[in-house]
Image (tube, rainbow, N blue to C red):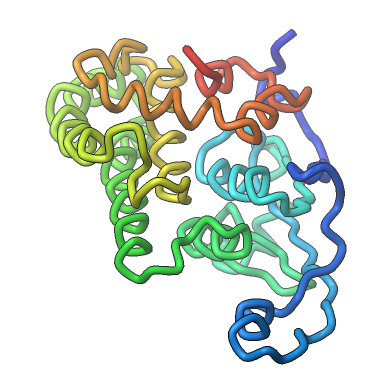
Length: 263
């Protein structure tokens, strides 16, 4: 049975996508340096503690969750209902969410959180240009979603739906066209090459949000006419760790049904 966002509250520590908790790691780059120089690698260090504070809905917290799920990072989540936001706003660095706690230190801004966790999870390419391609896709998704999210500022329901219909017919169609061209060039690969990146996860999240039916005035058929985007969304949804993430009991709300393969 699907759960409503308003009723759901969970404090969840996600299992490692690699089959168990990753308790230790070598310092970043130590193994590569050791292999290149013949020196012994430094002893492993304790993994950081990651704790994400956000509402139960996907929103601006989903890419961070997906980075951890795909990369096998242990993530503790504080998913709080909207009516408890004032309580958490009091400790939020910039008075907004999501925010991430790493070993007792807070990090704000979803883009900063996403890129940090993506780097920790190995989802940022080592090649500088490929990393820029992942960033390009990530930022394009911000351009895709922002006009839709801005409609929540419209208080009147009828006017809000009208505003969304205008976004769908104009800015959204234009940005999806750019994304279609970008993804089509990748063929059966991903936005920065043959490997999955956090840019792909953000694009998957953006496209799934659009077809979820979560926003009145945004039709579930909005991706019709964009076959490369539909194929990309399904390809990411079929990644084993992503698929397992949306099979979890705490991810069975109505909106996340659109994040599954062949949705």
